[in-house]
Every structure is written in C-alpha cells, then in structure tokens.
Amino acid sequence: MMKGTAIYAIHAAIALAEAYATEDKMLSSSAMIHAAGLPRHYGETVANKLRLAKLAYAHKGKLGGYRLMRAPEQISMADILRAADGPTAPANCVKSANVRCKECRKTPHCVAREAFVDAYEASLRKYESVSLADLLAKARANHGAA
Image (cartoon, rainbow, N blue to C red; front, side, top):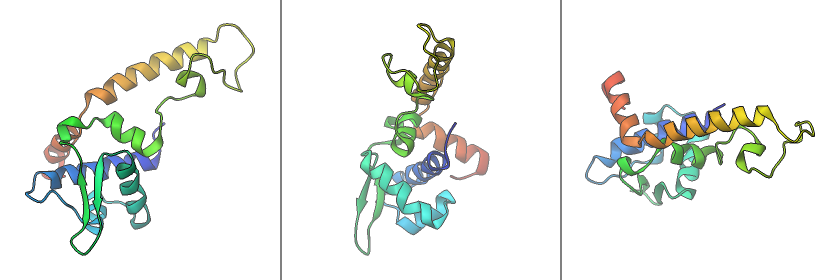
C-alpha cells in the first residue's frame, strides 16, 4: 500500500518536471510545495528524500530551490517511490528469498509469499515502465497543467 509520503513525492516530482522544461529548471521550495499541493510541513521532507536519492538537486540561497538531476524521461515512478519509502516490496520475505516473515508459519513452502512475489514483480514492472515524463503528460492532459 502506498503511503502518503510516496504520493506527495510523486506530486513534487511532477512539479519539478514541469519546471525542468523552463530555462533555469529551478523551482523554489515554496513554489514546489504550492504546485504539488503538498502540506507545508511535508514539502522539505519530500524534497530532501528526492535529493538524497539523487533525483533532485538543492541549491541554497535567495535564488535557490530544487531541480531534477536527470530529464523526466530518465526517472521512473519506481525511482520516486523508492526515494520516498525505500524498497517497494510488500513484505520482508519478498525482499529476499532467504528471509522469512515473523508472521509466517514454519512451513517449507509459503503460498502467501508466492502471491506477494507475483504481485510485487507485476507492480514493479509497471512502476519501472512509467516515467516522470509520462506522469507529467497525464497531469497536463487531466488538468491542463501539472
């Protein structure tokens, strides 16, 4: 299940992608928060997560702000989700074949894990196939602007 931080990160990344099309490619923190419709207290947290994941660059100062480090076409939805929430696996046993969930019964074959792995692999393929440019295009089509 996607957490609020991931959804906010997607909206912030879309706002940064919109700014990427401009000549300076920089978006102030307050402009990013406003464009993405983020709660003020989440803006810096989300921007910092994008920065730490090397998806965005932060420039301090009066003319500072944030900008994407790569073109929107080169950033996947999976990149953004990982930046916001870490690994996207729904359970610990999906992250690694040798890790058993503490809730799992001590059976040699867990059918729940099989279902989790199948769902995870399908969602990961989808998240990897959707670029930030795709998200921006959809936002523009649905709202006339990001």
